[in-house]
View 1 (cartoon, one colour):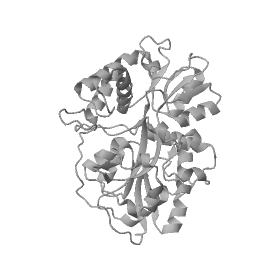
View 2 (cartoon, one colour):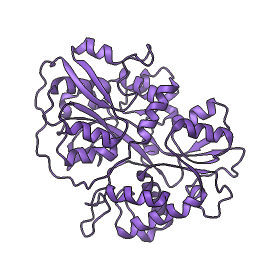
View 3 (cartoon, rainbow, N blue to C red):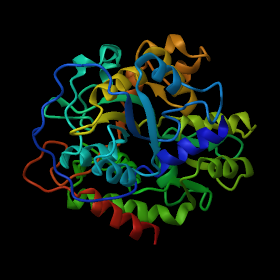
View 4 (spheres, rainbow, N blue to C red):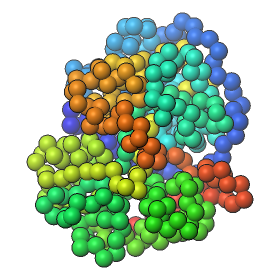
Length: 387
């Protein structure tokens, strides 16, 4: 299981790669109106761990039961980055994709995916309201996908090295930190949003309302903070196994993490704890989206409904290490404390999470008198930050 979690976590870790200017507009395609018989197949682009067929673990298989129930044979292309997902979907060879928030708006803007008729996905009614019609999965109140799961980027520390226990992101940004050289940070341009989130609280005069909607001054302040932080960083991580090892060895004692990483580090006897800091955190919510002109649209819709059905959504969440999107999935998890650990039903907790969203030139916070930095500029800045 750990091998697949590692693969899945690595896929998510590099999900924020890539750039390109992105704008969004009203839908040019209409959602499918009726659901007919399946076409016999469905071609998916997915993150590792999202479409398990028993090949990694015979006990972990929700693909073959789907095929038996619907007659739709699943063909899955596992993508390693969001850029790869976008490019694969542009070929027109795939029917659906499990897009992360840094790719979804690019797919919408490129008219690569179509609006989704949620009435054709019966299990959508049980999706947590906190995940519906959000900036990363809808445009102007039109749904472009079905929420899959969610998680927060947390602050983790070695309890035997860091004292007192931190409750703020200031622990990783303080230039006078006593942990210089042993701080770790997430290796991705999307990490700029973590700096912006911290500045929302500590420098309110910047007027940051959304960490993914940064004008010139706000963006520069975030970049400057990360350049300052670089002197504290011992390692930027993208491979979860390396972060676990770094915290076990003591090479890292403080930094960003995911709940699944904290759980596994604790299972390996590393003295660590993790928390959602008082400023809140960034996080992710992946979305299943249907291709414009999908060759197997009925099977695609059947897959969307299947993957968020309570039992299957619980299986995926436990295998990957994230909170399920279906409110009824918690009753189906094999570990009955799983949803408590991942705060699945805690909307107050997730109200503090700013989910990854593709930064675009049109400011996502509603401002119209300025232009915000798009993701291509975030990517260039990240290269400068790391040096």
